[in-house]
Picture 1: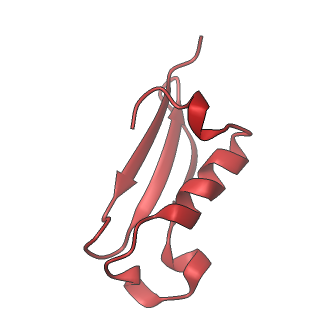
Picture 2 (picture 1 turned 60 degrees about the vertical axis):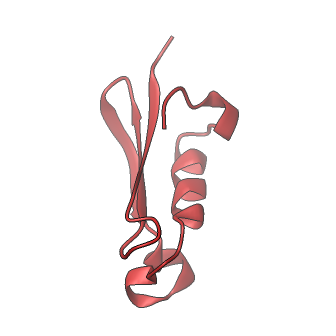
Length: 67
């Protein structure tokens, strides 16, 4: 079974982002500002960036092993 790791960065400060690794390989990564069109997306959680990463890998939140 592949290890699925979701990395979150910048939440509640600036430049929030998400990255998804499956068995050590980067599958998807995105910054929140690209989805909400708010430069640096200060004080936001990377909700849309996380959703994008999961969609790219065709996974659901329950499939993630480590955050």
